[in-house]
Image (cartoon, rainbow, N blue to C red; front, side, top):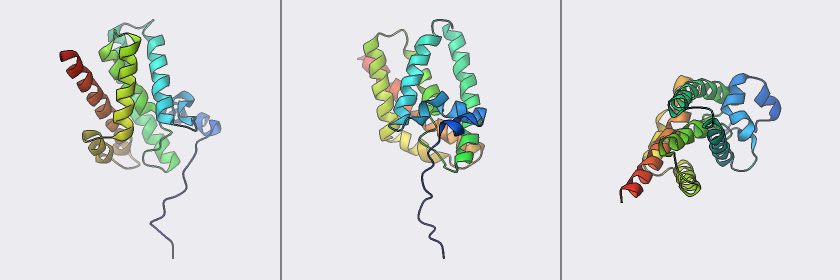
Amino acid sequence: MTDTTTPPPAFRPTAKFLLTHPAHFIALGFGAGLSPVAPGTAGTLWAWLAFLVLQQWLTPAEMGWLIAASTLAGWWACTVTAKAMKVLDPGSIVWDEVVAFWLVLWLVMPADFGAQLAAFGLFRFFDAVKPGPVAWADQAFKGFNYRGGFGILFDDFVAAFCTLLVIALWRFW
């Protein structure tokens, strides 16, 4: 008789796993998701740095198209990688943080370092703590198919929306 209540041991991806499939490379945030400590924070920091570099060469409209394309590519990559890892929403998949935080920065820029840091802190709060609508979004779509891949991204977009809402309310007052 097997114990069906015990979850399988956590899968820790390695650099070898990262490089075995292009989807893994994308989903693990080009390696940021391999961080042994707080991979979601590492992915968000990578997103912040990448955004600052990319905005030097891309117009805001081109950045918007990049975010849209990265969302679609991420949906595929997160679906493939979660299935390969046999984990519904692995913490090492950080592409969801990347595209969601790019969206936040894209909509708040231009902003000084303090405002960007506040956006980072708010986004990490909503993504990690998952209050209210973020918790709902985190549970809304699960599975090892396209639905699960979308679910990995969805809660981070809700966290991004909550971040943007707080920033908009702050600016309003």
